[in-house]
Length: 259
Length: 256
Ligand SMILES: Nc1ncnc2c1ncn2[C@@H]1O[C@H](COP(=O)(O)OP(=O)(O)OP(=O)(O)O)[C@@H](O)[C@H]1O
Ligand SMILES: [Mg+2]
Image 1 (tube, chains in turn orange, blue):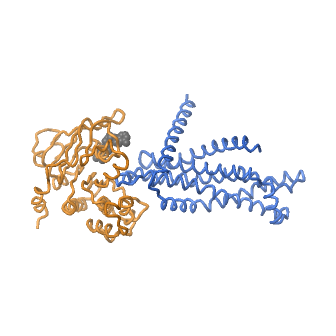
Image 2 (cartoon, rainbow over the protein chains, first blue to last red; image 1 turned 90 degrees about the horizontal axis):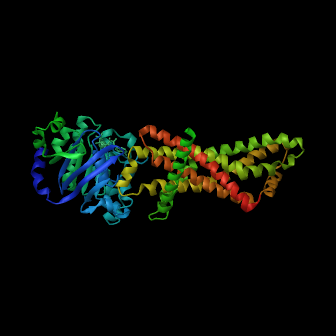
Image 3 (tube, rainbow over the protein chains, first blue to last red; image 1 turned 120 degrees about the vertical axis):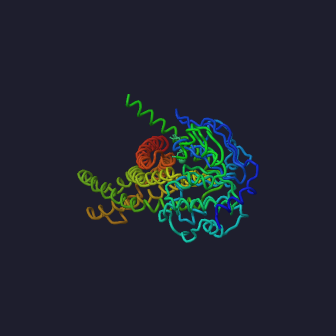
């Protein structure tokens, strides 16, 4: 069975026309560095949206504003109908359990084993699973979906880059998020490992029924996973469309991405 | 010109540190409490500095006794040795020197640990997984340092007095009982209590500065080294300022 075909078939029914994520006129400046100048974005429920942009164009800044790690200068950010810039700490923490965030550098807790890494998000949010006392089945389940059950007692330093990325992915899955934000999921990996991660992303989407926002400058990754794409240039959404639409574009700045 | 810049940056640092401390006290009393992590930090801090404090204390005791003995002998006042050594160790030298070694070990350790967690985005990862990293990482470490340093100082003081006894015993043939009798006769609560209260502030300052430097660490791996380094320098400096204030206040209340 061709995995791509599988995705194609499933694509239509999964996506609904409801926004799960909405960014309006987002602005962020560091000193004289105007990083975001009015960025807009809508993510539909069940959709895979890819954001592409040059290094330093503010992709990470945008995604960090999205989860409240950075405060934007102006603009509104709505996650599942709630404006995250106005939430208090407790509500924000609660909302964050519905958002998975895969960091650019994996960001595993290096003083903890893989098991403890995965248990960490559960410490304060067991109520999501009916206050279970034994979290082991959840840990195993998340590790199974990334195919790394054997690594459960290893330290992050003992894992390869690709394995670290997969453990990090398992850690974002453990709270069963509705949205996953991928910050360059394939950066720093060799092409074969990158492909594995992409396959994993597709499988996770089917298994967990998530909506995903994927930041990347890997054209291959964008081609395979995207249903819609936004190009981030000069701090705004410069162009929008499907992969093939954008690839056929005549605009010089858009063409530069596909060379 | 250069001096005014240095003073200005120092004052800004103090201001930011005060703000950080305010956040600590705000979060300290908010639920949920991280008891398990607090115990783990206490253990790790105690474990890391125990040997260092022991050795430092012992050597302080030896050195002070060796250095002062000839002078006292000149005046025929060797019998004052235990009282003199104990008062100087308990009141001032023990707390300050042990706090300084503690700062070298713990402030730099915390600074480097939190700093590297910051630059590798581990703190951000905690934040987005819905756990408050300030409570989990900072509050527990500051509290652990505050609680552990007084215990370590008392232990270090005891070892220092023992070191002093060894010299007295070999040079002056003073018995264990006599030595410690004289020590406890010389010491009053007015010596012990202010000295112990002072060490809580020392511990707090060391934990606070270490966490502050690490938590706001910048600029990659260079920043981590810088955070560790400046945590030691800044906390040592703060120690002397606190010590000065403590002695000043004690002077007013206890009229030594
Ligand atoms: N905390 C910060 N303080 C100051 N400037 C920052 C900060 N974070 C990001 N920037 C600046 O914002 C700009 C965008 O950074 P960002 O990390 O979002 O880039 P990116 O698009 O994610 O690039 P890459 O593909 O390399 O990850 C950069 O010029 C960077 O210098
Ligand atoms: Mg980035």
